[in-house]
Image 1 (cartoon, one colour):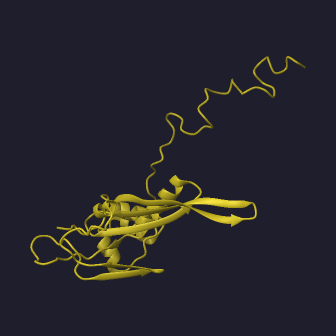
Image 2: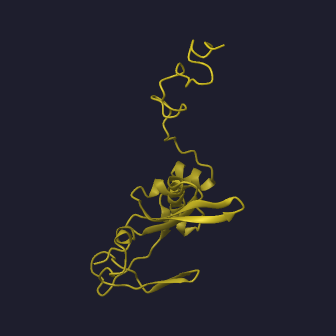
Image 3: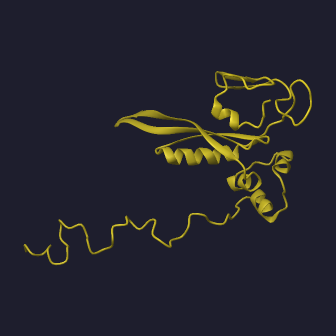
Length: 196
């Protein structure tokens, strides 16, 4: 009975030495399938985009079609850049104690008139960021651009004063010739308005 676990590395105290070379549980092997798969559209809009019937995001905005697949945005806006603005822990009190999850806030834009915002909460930070980027792509909207002062060159600011409200927070955007000092540097690169 004593030599039962010593013959081939079996028994209760063994680590299973004859099963492989310790590369984990079978994920990430050499020559495996890549994560990048060809996009198979599910919605009617996705099929029209893949077939080439719709040629720009402006056509989608013109007919107010809902975008349900983020690959549509990837197809039309390949130059989108994303920026993680904030990651914060949020907690829910349960009977067993506190359940901590992480909330990620991501902005996305291409500096050419398209901007989106995504917020997602998940148990892991990486999962929250990935999902927030997808939500930001699905919520991309066009931004009208205009001039401040003279109308020479390309539009570089907003056409008029704009305001928006969410909860108790009101944001007001005013056309200006320079970048306001209170705008965070990470936000300056993403928005579509190029300030002069």
